[in-house]
Image 1 (cartoon, rainbow, N blue to C red):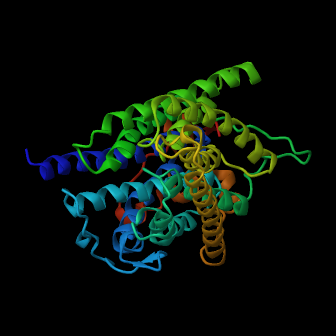
Image 2: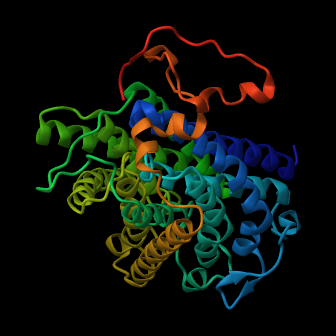
Image 3: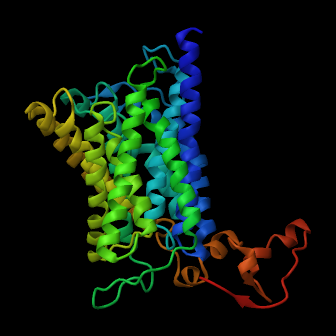
Length: 435
């Protein structure tokens, strides 16, 4: 088989695996939020895969990979991303599809942090603006060969900064501006824990994300014959395992219980942190990076709670803080120029600069989107919508019908009867179980 054919098969499969990670995001978030908001988080993932994907194809890809203006922004390929010249044994369409998976993943990071209280129209606007400009612009700086951070020598193999950090810090800004869910924080600063709806469901989402991460990282070679494919894959596995191990043991020691949601986030933190350096570090370094990320996620989560910022799924701690750490870790552990491995400091300086710049851009971008949403469609759901739950308020259907019985379900569930002529059966007994 010719190399171009082999590469095409590999990257199309890798792109499909990365896009399948959206199913992981959906299950993870649905399991970690309350029952009355599980449909809403799933619908937001559909927004990512539909509106977000189209926005990236039409404009975002060009901003990211078009001809560079001053190393800052792309100026070509608008509406025709397939016209990019790669200089690789790979069809441009396969590359575009793969990059589309990265773009929608960046939006989905935000989805969890703003869960349970964001206006659905505001989320649609968020998905569009993230994929049109926020993600592609900083991505241009890092991944377009003429981008200013790329010219400085910044290394971010599969996106600890370009995807996770920008998404995580945009999520931080938006969660702050949205405000906390009602009853989340007490006046004395203590935190009320809202029980997740379904931990096994969230765990299934984490397993899917872990599976897709092998393509996320190894697929970034864009070359099925690349000799580093296996080392990238095992570094990915080791970092995820190490992050999960540390959080599992630390929560047992700190809280007396092996916390399942924190263990899930520990695994994801290890995967986020290794994403930048998976092709540049050895296996022991991957384990160390993953282990440190497992510590970071616990204390970052506590910090965010202390700041009274409500993040229902821990997205900021996982993606923002560990995206930042993973980017810097390349400057520490890179086998050819890392501070700990060679004593050199130049790469570390570049990685520090890039990490800080991208984090700031994420904060600015997230705050700008929140403000635009606030003055246009409205940023936050109404008090009544939150109380009822966003599933019924915005989508007219509960996640778990067997748990809810109504005599008079909200009109929104059946408002299509008049236009379709379809009659929906009403349950007999009124009883609401769960939240």
